Image (tube, rainbow over all chains, first blue to last red; front, side, top):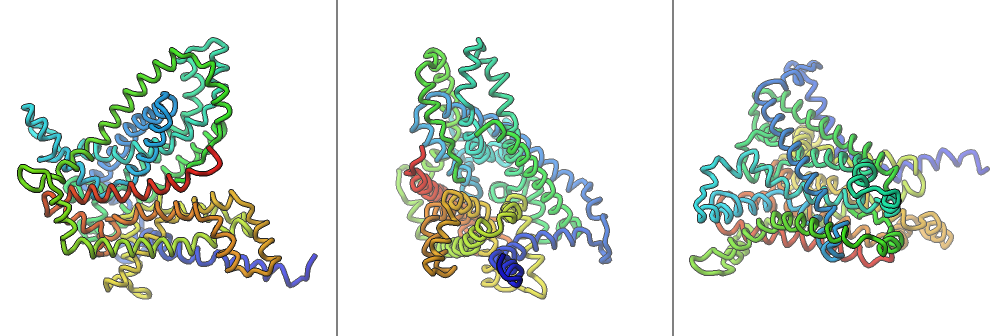
Length: 288
Length: 280
């Protein structure tokens, strides 16, 4: 063994290599979150309290959280199912290699094509003067008279699916590829039908991945701000938009409540990411 | 998003021959239907926006909307500023993540889960919450950064660098796993190389593809970012696009097409540089 002085010095030396990372993350990721956490526990008189979290049950906040959760659930579910269908089609449908690689590259593009340009594209498509709206008008149907609006819950749902479906495709494609051909052959040799193969083999193996990815989609929609802001400016109550308004001015007339809402979002996001990674770990037992 | 490619190629090749032909055909029809319907949903908004972008002048198809967009006196400054922000953020992220990932792989493998967890924080903290925290943290002493435009801009760039951590770390980590870090380092050390030299001359060249894809992905996300820039009152491309969408009729369509082309270029380049590998 080497000299007695060596180990402690090397230990310190080891830590020096990761200090910049921790300092930077502390300043720009952890610090900002901690200050919100601290302020959310601070009462009007400066004492520690949970009052701000109790105030989350106020109607305005419940409405915003409720709409955010519903929007995220619906887009995660539809996006998950459609995305799974698309992933199945390009991986097992025999559409050819170029369709597959084209679709996955496009999915990479579309899953990052959120925010203002996405909102604008849909305004030109389904807005009051949008191409599809005009087309319907030409056919004698006034879309907006039927109660449809791009700036409503279902309008937002249609827009959000534009980045939800591709994310599902990107994450679930490797899982579908992980299904072994021998399993299918073994099932067929034992006389199983396609339906039985899917029900008893493929579906149970894929279930954790599919569920996990849908939860990831949930978080993806839940934390989204730019697209909804660009589309509605804030006319629809969503948790992220409410926080945005709270930053610009104390719309809740209660700063502490603003911090509690922000922390509530962090908790929900953390929960969904946690469940996602647990399910993903579970699915790795079979796939790969 | 560097996909984990699982090499099932030999298995598939062996299994392809006896696969029942009728089943394959039935599958294919269903697959085409699913693909076609989804493709319509994804292409319609692009087509509609493109069509609008050509209609700035009455009764003719022109590129007038694009001309107006590029001629707008606010366009270029906002876009340039976002370009610079993105470049600096990528550089910063690179300078932090590459040595850290290398060091952890080589010397402190036990710290890996901690680092991994921290790099995933941007997925847990929504942008609007992050900027909320940044404003509250840096608007009063000891560190006041939100009082001027330029100091807010520093905050913005640092936030962007932090946002890129999940992508950058993942890319670098994958790259490091693909090579023998220890042997390379020992070889370099035995030739008398210093730490900076090892990083710059040995590790960096081997990580080029990984770093480039991480950088391009960061670029795609950051170039049109709205939320953080908006609340830090920055005149970058994201807030500019939001303002344009509210105030103009035809220019936003040209803008959306340009933004889509930029994202497409970044992602297409990633696909290009990551494809010609031995695997697959």
